[in-house]
Length: 302
Image (tube, rainbow, N blue to C red):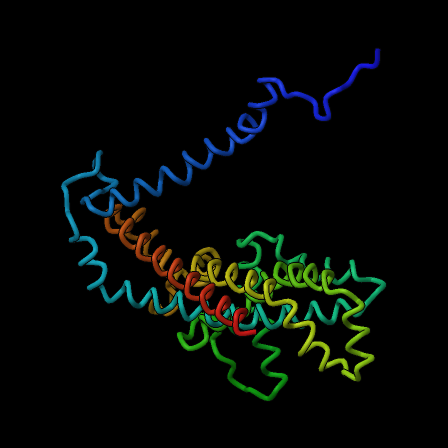
């Protein structure tokens, strides 16, 4: 007598718990180091919490929020953060797209361009900061000599002049992080079928027309991803500014995260710093939601 077998193997009780068991270490890490501190930050914002004494301290209600919203330094650091976001997001999106389009035209040696543009991204922020501190050094830096080649006798103090400090840090950040966006765009270009290029060429479209009317629209989702990731990363800037200028000169480059660090860990006012953290989180969330809404509206119109 022929025996029939089940089309699918039956799962045992151990197999049923294999997936959750593999997710358990990450879930514990997520709860302890992300969800836990977030809940503590929300609670500490309503108390006069300090590092100098144990516990949450006295209940403060909304006084921390009133103090932060009425603090001119909070608005100045938030303005510096938004200005840095504008200075870095636009060139990092446009430049990475241009570099990816150029590298995609090379059939041979494409790996070299991937390595060359992505290599700076793996450098630690301390290494990049020290490197550009030497480049921007007064009288001896390469940037000073480069400007003199164009006939400028008195180059500016790149990190010592309030008008140039943020621009200099933004330029260093673009050089450092353009490789990540470049790789994302290069991966998106691999999904554009060659048949689309050939059909556009048969219809008489030139290289620029194919890029403008075919390639760029098909990279819409990649552009959305790159822009959102870049905006969030720029709004959380801290490392390179703290190491290159420490927020100076005259506070012209001090970001919101440095205000959180100074008030929370230097001055010990954890409640005040928690309030600033939550308000910065609201700003990041608001910017992200607005951008997603604009992108979805544009996709529906197209």
